[in-house]
Length: 220
Ligand code: ADP
Image 1 (cartoon, protein in one colour):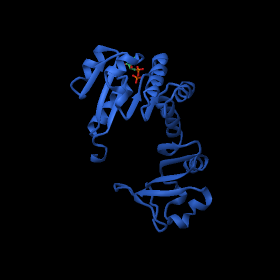
Image 2 (cartoon, protein in one colour):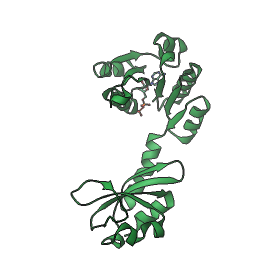
Image 3 (spheres, protein in one colour):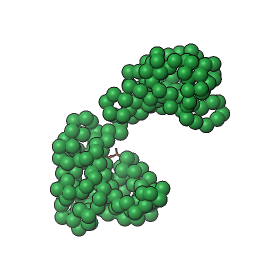
Image 4 (tube, helix red, strand yellow):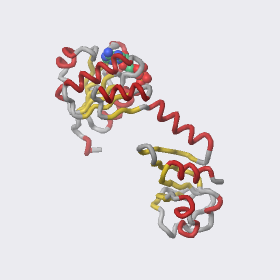
C-alpha cells in the first residue's frame, strides 16, 4: 500500500521467517536493510532486496557502520541462535531504535527479549501450533486470538442456526458471540446484520471471548 511507502526497516536474520518478512516489506514499499552473518544467504537475497549486508549483529561497531541506529523500525528474526538473538536485541535497544520486533522460539525466550528491550515479541511456531489445534478438531476454518481472552474465528454455520435470522437464532444470547460477517455458498463475505438469514453451508466470522468462540464452534 502507498500508506507504508517510505518506511525504513532493518531486518536481521534471513531465515525462513526473516526472509519472507523482508520480501513482503519490500513488496509493500518499505525500504529494507537486511543483514545476515551467513554470506551464502545474503547472496541469495541480493537480487530480491535493495540493501543487503553480511555482518555479525552482536557487534555494535558493525551495526554502526551499517547505519542501523538511524532506522525507526527493526525486526530481529534470529531464531535458533538464542544468544545472538538476545545480544542483537539488546544492542538495538541501546541504539534507542523506537520500534523493535523480535522473534522468539519459546515463551521464556520471548520474556528475555522483552527484558532486554524488544517492544513486540512474536512466537510464530508456538502461535501457529495453537491455531492449528483449533482447526483440526472442530468446525473452525480459521482462528486468531487477541490478548489472552478474545478471539475471532471463521466457521461453517451450525445446523441449529440454518433458516433463521441472526436475531432469530439467538446466537448472541445463547453463546455470547457476535457474528461479524456471513458468506453464502459461492458468494463473498459481507457484514452481518440482525436480519441476515443463515443458509446451509454458509460460513460465518464470529468474535467473542475464547471460551465462547470455542463453544460455538464445537456445536454441530
Ligand atoms: P528461521 O527459523 O526463520 O529459518 P533461523 O534461526 O534458522 O530462523 O535463521 C536465522 C538467521 O539468522 C540465519 O540465516 C542466521 O545466519 C542468522 N544469524 C544467526 N546469528 C546471527 C548473527 N549473530 N548476526 C547476524 N545474523 C545471524
